[in-house]
Length: 182
Image (tube, rainbow, N blue to C red; front, side, top):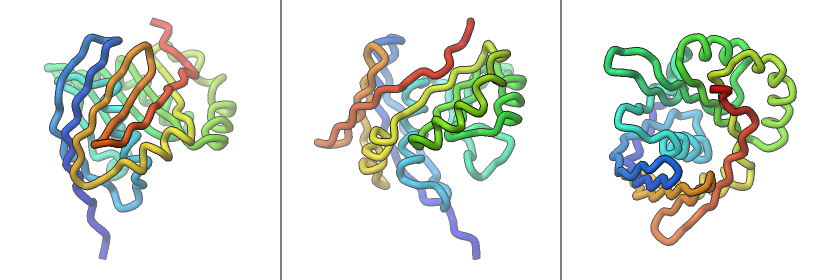
């Protein structure tokens, strides 16, 4: 019998001084059986970094044709496509064709670096693509914060991120490998 997703209840308070966005989101996050705590927390962090009233978590690992997070306009147009991990060149190309803006949040240390070296020349043509890397140390520490019921506070200022749960804090420094040309 197939394992079911584990449900996480997250109260996510975002204070983004860079975008002047201050809001609390109540999220119900389904953690796929193959998903690690580290990936779950990277997904929540990616949500916080792009927080918007129309931003949604998708089926993620349960759907091949959807990103992990997306934002659609009121008319249904895909405004933002957020993918996690190390998508193939084909997936990146298709994503850039489907959405106005695409952000790939990669992590995994040396594996992510090798992926980027392999794919970066083929991404030059996409002016709507950003690639942002999180260090292995940062994501490992984030994974330790995961619990089934969380009150997360995410503060963003000058590109630096502080994530706190109760008395625990993790500082994350996103590294932009590719910025949009817009």
